[in-house]
Length: 239
Image (cartoon, rainbow, N blue to C red; front, side):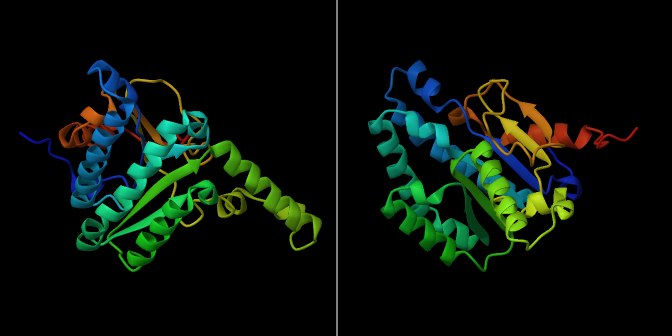
């Protein structure tokens, strides 16, 4: 029986570090690319359930700045899968009123991937039920460095005073400036680290680490995590 959740108390923004594709493939004596292919199917399932229960923003850590250090063959395969996903999921996004957004160093992606990404974002720009936010060529330290440089340049040219720099101003200079901070951060595969993901934005996010590898992550386990989130007392530093 599917886990019941209180749809009136669903997190506005869920962020997920999708980890374990490579290990899933290795356990089955498969090429790592097969793990990424299976992981793409999990993405579709989790996007669908988020839309059904009313999550407004879903941010998926799809490709990090560090991932560029993987073998050229694996990077090429990941870019091919990303391009395929951007094309194949357009109908689903349009049908379910999901708007696609992307954060990160998008200019580092191959031109054909950038083109399909821009096309899908343009197609879905009027969709208003949910935002699927893909972190692509993303690293939080790079994002924070970019933010510091942009604010410093404004202070230098006199357009803002240094005393005017605030937490809100910092948030407004991040990739996520129009997106609320995550209420819940999920990491699959059991690794107990953040991996350079949304370091500023997750200051008060609820954390949930599951041992499940991403390709094996299911709709029901996701709903169980949402139920766990709903039982937590979020105090934000207050008593």
